[in-house]
Length: 216
Image (cartoon, rainbow, N blue to C red):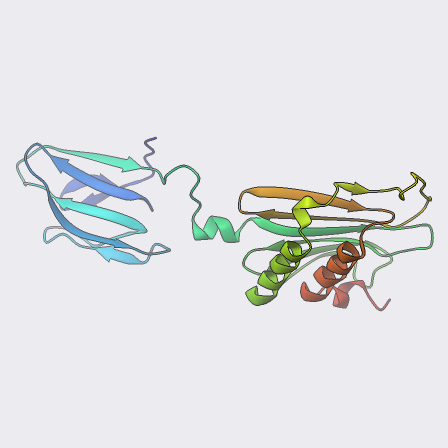
C-alpha cells in the first residue's frame, strides 16, 4: 500500500516525508547513503546537497543529479503498530454499576503508558471525569495479574450459581483487557470466581481509583 503524507524540499527536489520507509531510486544504480531507526521523529538524515530530514525508519539513496527519480513511500507492514499508537490504546477497563443499597458507580480506562481516565457517576467521592498517570510498572503488574488467573479462559458472564439460581439488585462489575491482538470482557454479577473478584479490587488499587471512589 502506498500513502503520501506531506511534501518537502530536499536538495532542490520535491520529496514526500513521513515516519515510514523513504526510498529514492534512479534509472541507473543506487547507493545507500544512511539507514537508521528510531521510535519517534527524532533521527536525522542528511544529503550533502540537502537539508536535514527527520524520520522514524528511513533509507535514503543518493541519486545522480541529472537522473530522473521516483519516490515511493511504503506503509508499515500489516499488523505493526507504532509505539505512540500502542500507548494511546485502551489496555484495561473496569466499570462498576450501583446496587439497591447505593454501591459506588464508576468506570476507568487504563492505557499502556499508564494514563488512567476515571469517570464517577453515583455514590462516589468524586463525580465526573478525572485523569492521572500511574507508573508503567503498575500497568505491567495488572497485565500479569490478568495472565495469572487465565482471564481469557473465564466465562463471558457470571450471573447465576451452579444450580442456575441468581439474585436481584446486586452490583455489576465489568472488566476487559486488550492484549496481543486479543480482547476479552467479563461481567461479574453473581457467583464469580474469587480470583476475578480479587483482580477487580487490584485494578482499583493499582490504577489509583480509591482517591476518587471513597471514603465518601
